[in-house]
Length: 509
Image 1: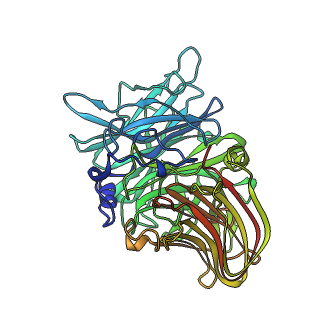
Image 2: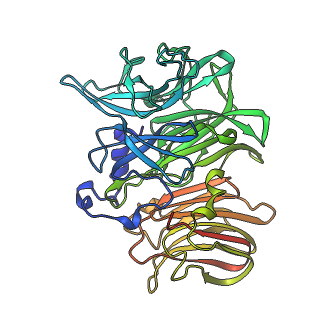
Image 3: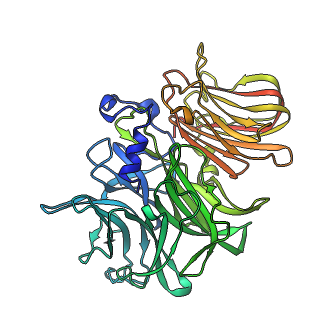
């Protein structure tokens, strides 16, 4: 759960306008076409991700009443394809009594298959939500549980909440999973200001025992939030498993997620790298608070993050989720690293969602030139999915110009810098008023593979996610194109061969 302190700092960036200035102005031009947004009002962290009865359940931090942060509750939506979402009533609302207010902060959900909690009825396993209860009057955060006997549509609060209470102001975001070797539930929860993740164990989801602490390590300039400990396959070998611990934090220039690779024995997580090493999940300025569907089809672990907006106001909604990402670990020259690719559930079905024919070309030769790819009838809605492979042996830069407009020099550039060996997103020309100067150029170090750079660009109205070299590096950011700025081109500084290019127009689902 993004803390109020971190949220406040992010929204105070020089370029950000306060909520009240534009909240009544509808902005349909910035509503994503293939990323999740709530129909109305505020959203932030994804919560309680679970695949249940053939359906992806998405709970999320939500203000049911206003298009700004507050009244924190769990919103709810479901999907079978991770593109089309069915919006459902609030699943866990805030609780207000004469004595206190309890906001429902971030957490997770598990299917208690063996009814260890005793919440099941008529032989049916309950869905149990584990979340942080933030009580501002008491200046306290503690861990609560709730249970559902109607497939997650609604939850009843456990009568003996809280299940963990340290009487701390900042203690949040429990992420729970079943650990079969020790036959118990494991919780990772943030000791925010200590820059530590605490692990607890429980046989019944009600009674929790402290197991160990991890941290401080990596990035520690701001508090740690939203932990998630995941077992991942290494190099596609199901017999080789390592554990990845994800942690969110307010970075130097906006949201930051880091990760640690190591081993977990049911009690302790041991980092395989030096304590000082900082590994970055996403090199952009928008990706935050990501957790995963652990039990997705095909034994996939699918990560979903909040894309933190905070620049011009959108209405009648605020906030969106990232594209779901399949996770894996791969051996690199620098050691084991996290790879993220757009979920195969989505990417394998793009032709079903596309408007018109897919643009598909091979061996396009460019020499200090750019070629327009958008037309008056296609690829002109700022909702394109681009896959490209560049041979850059005789170029200095190559990539794409996005959000182009006739007669205007404003545009966004996504490309690769050969000399610096960097994947980059450059918003300098388009976003002078909408971004902090520190965030106009966002880069990720990346080397060619056999002389080839692969770039995927997921442009969706007000967001860009750039995936380099099959998930080796990712840059995510928010954009707000002006009216009519919907064209895009491919460019090269020097001689470039585009080995393969495919573009899907997803402007209409």
